[in-house]
Image 1 (tube, rainbow, N blue to C red):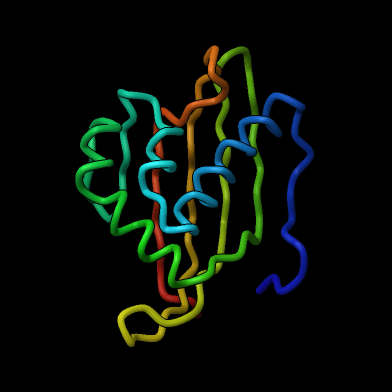
Image 2 (image 1 turned 180 degrees about the horizontal axis):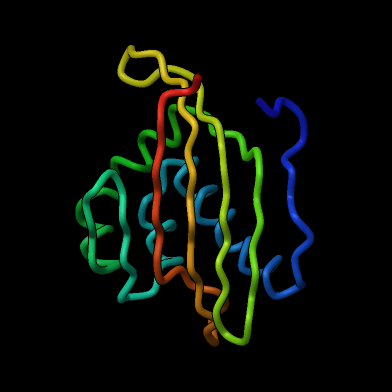
Length: 138
């Protein structure tokens, strides 16, 4: 278990910029702002979580963005590892984190893996795909 600073692989400046968009997405959720998080998604974003799929920014915004924001605002998550690559206008950022706290009076201790694929646009990096997976911490 990593208890110190996150282990971040060396990344190009483009990959670092894409990672900043990932961090901004999580910061918006952490403030309970699902709309601000959804603004960082491309219109055609595809989100996979727990065996389910949301096939657009609009679908995510109308279904899980609010619940994800409420959860993230209530239960702190700490980045433990990250890597990523940018090539041309596409990037992938892979992150691992640990989420601990209480949500709806239930103790939470989970390890989450996340892959985000981003596309560079005139407005900055936008998330086109998210794949989340989590498990109870050992």
